[in-house]
Length: 243
Length: 328
Image (cartoon, rainbow over all chains, first blue to last red; front, side, top):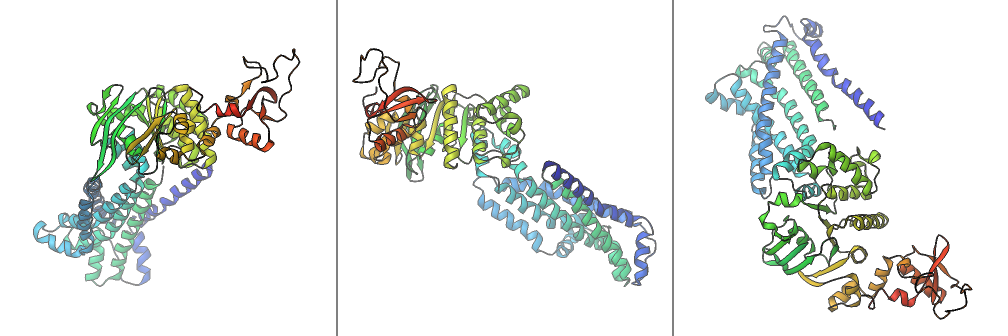
């Protein structure tokens, strides 16, 4: 049984590399225009900056927002799941939920007068949007830790800090990582909006395509953003797998 | 030795435990028995301060537990609960090693200690060391739970309905195993249970609680044959004596053939010829309640007790009663 699970796992590992491989192939200069131009939707020429630079910028935006989201969301979730903080937890969930109910475009538009154009307002939008799945999953994961395990941990003399690091976080890990994964994949899509604010990334060909009525250009940006999302999702599934 | 002095716990307006005075003697297993809601679990949890008392004192080896840090206090006390509470992300060996790790003990010594403990609770270390709690049966998981509580060799063990969630067969086996372990280790054990059979079977002493107060504290015999109140009599039930017999092998009650009383009663001095033994025989490992049932079924007064088929003694009505009032 163990051997079967191991080979199954290895096959899954290889499948997870499929999307990143496809993404890399599409980034070779000339490959994507060669595939899209025959569709007769418009004309795609050489890009300035090149597609790989746009993809890296996009990835940078997403990963940076992801790190900030984790840095804010995880301590917040831990803080509100301590004993006798039910009211605080509900307040936090409502406030965090607001970030996802207000449309990202509105967040960006409101942020521009304060933060100017570029990465700053885009990051703010991504953080507001990405915080929800991370915080709510972390809260669910931490609250789902078996009361028996917690009582045993306390009864054996673990301090609050030891219970958090040795019992609660490891047990909540799969649920927390699932939240991070959702948040990251959402934000690959959301980050395309950032191009309108001059943050660059894969939104650039999309916005240029819209203004030039060039569907092929829109398709180029969309395909790459989708492949990037699928790649990140697949790579993160490797980390989320139970050890 | 654990001493409770005027211990009290108030939840809101109601008293869960009031004016409780008890001494748990060293090296003995005391069963905290009582109906649900009688305060027995609260009492247990006040000993290692998982619940803080509202009043009174707990002395552990003469020291007031309030003078210790709760974490330090708990690391020195073994703790076993009904839900077992093994950590599902750690394997069996890591679970057992929890408290030695918290105490910063040497890794290699701990690994040897883990194997020793798995052996003690009847689990083969090579088979079970690397298993995850999810791969264990209920009985196996609770054996690991007991091993984990004993890991740092604490003098005191607190157990909250440790066998309550097991099926009857696994419970019987684990109770037997635990009785053997306790006979060897002689820990000071406080075991919460609502199961009368378990209390009579495992307890050197039983503390029967009712509505937050101590109703009676004594040996199982005291509670059965010398109940101090109607509540005690009713709680143990009319068949209390039978329950107690059920927990003991008939061999404990027999009159040995070659002992000081070795001759058959009423047949002394027949000049060396073997006196006839009772026709009906039972093995010495049979529980005494079943032996009593055999006496009733066969309509006879005495049974032969055998060991591996060889007669070693006899037992009759009076011997079985001897677990009761006449015994010191």
